[in-house]
Image 1 (cartoon, rainbow, N blue to C red):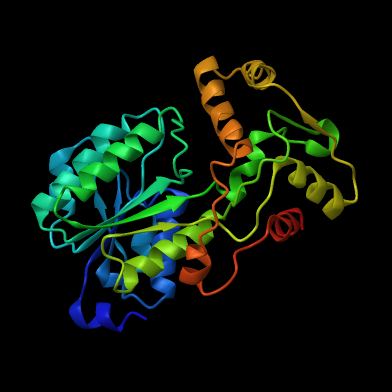
Image 2: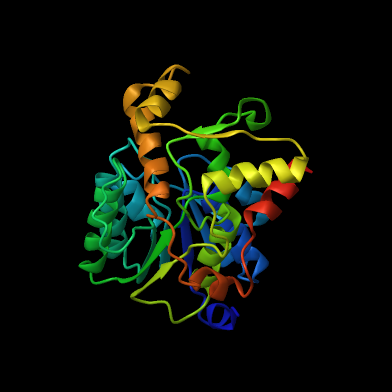
Length: 294
């Protein structure tokens, strides 16, 4: 798989390596046989990847000069998108512009999946994704855009920490999504970074399992043999419940916008791209829940 990389000594830099996706991408690159001296992690702080022989360079998305220095000698950059509420516009623009100035050839960007023609704007995310994609496509660099579905391993974030006692109460019912685990997505990133032929392409990385929040309640109940009451509530009731836990209303509205988007099918598209990149079907929600409850 990685002969081309080994022969040409292509240098790959992965940003955000202290996060789950960035770190996982580096670990999967190593598993796929990419030599550690061809992998660089970018972080605002050093961490254990250096112990695996992977160079970790300092870089801050807001510090343009640090990015220029970090990108020296790099061929491919995996731009792990930064989190909401942090001026993603400036940060992503800096990464792409510094990459071009430093002589990087190819930037891979992880965006959030969007339903074709929906026009939905998820606050703090959609507009900065659209901006980043436009900057990347007009940069003259080779690009790959990877549309990410909801993370299967974070879906429990949307309901009560103890669903067996308190049930699942969300502004949703049978709206489906196609989630994938962050580990599966990181592995797909590693495949794209370590093999040729992905230039100027987009991939939609929905998983094989199509599930709703009501499905989730049924699966949780069946796996443990305990009932999980499921209740559809209004978006306003859901926001109020989050605010009651001490979260600001703006953040509560942000979280709610994701659940409403799931209910309305924003993340339902299954292109088969993820299965093809991994060479296998992705985990089902039942398999994931069984493994975590065990």
